[in-house]
Amino acid sequence: MPGMEPPEPTRLGEVRWLQPFPDVLLECLADTAPGPEARFDARESISLAFITALQLLPPRQRAALILRDVLGFHAREAAEILDATEESVTGVLERARAALQRQLPEGQHGAPPPAGSPAERDLVQRLTRAFESADVGAVVALLTDDAWLTMPPRPLQYQGRETAGRFLAATAFRPGRLPRLVPTRANGQPAFGLYVRDPHGGVCHAIGVLVLTLSGPRISAMTCFDTSVLSAFGLPRTLREGR
Image 1 (spheres, one colour):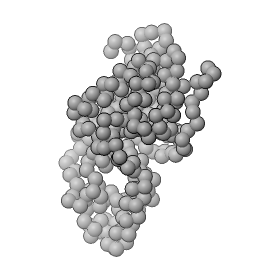
Image 2: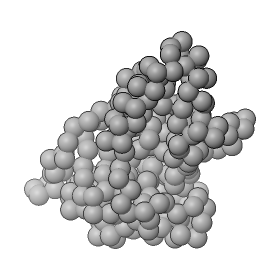
Image 3: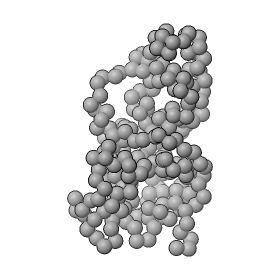
Image 4: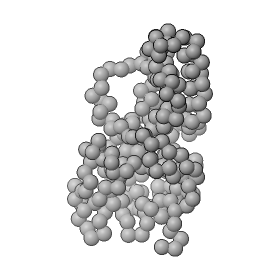
């Protein structure tokens, strides 16, 4: 339709092996409480933003940062694991921290509400109502001004409310398309199985998994993965209406 083409992407940036991780699997892990030197808590270290930034680091920087800042190993212990001197590990770690700082969001919108809190539930409910009624304005109102829309492994990335609204209007909310969201959780964040209702009624077809990144009372990122990740979340490819 004229005027319904998606906007030009803000940038191209691909992380090929980024995948969402179901929260239910985290509950099955043994206690892996980090050591006292860890800089990142469990929630930060499994977030999509952190994992995306981490995957952009060279392997040795990635290893040093995980050992020291996520797991909390002392410098001597990390050096032994990496078969290196403490001085070299310290240098690699400093470069990794600087690179990670450049990649991670600045967090100017505040910390996300606690998982399962009334604030988080309210935001999720409002997003669900807006999405399932294809209300572009209501969805955009929940975003931060600099929110990102990404769709890994596709390299297209969109930033900003106005751009997000145009993209959603031309894709997920285009005329004749009505989405349905099935709640789940991924990487410590609210997530949904994303479905589209069949125009002939009765069935919804999966188009992917949508993961939210919350910052304060708003959404700072929406990341949509394709249908290849559905099985990890126990989500079917089709749903009957009313289920």
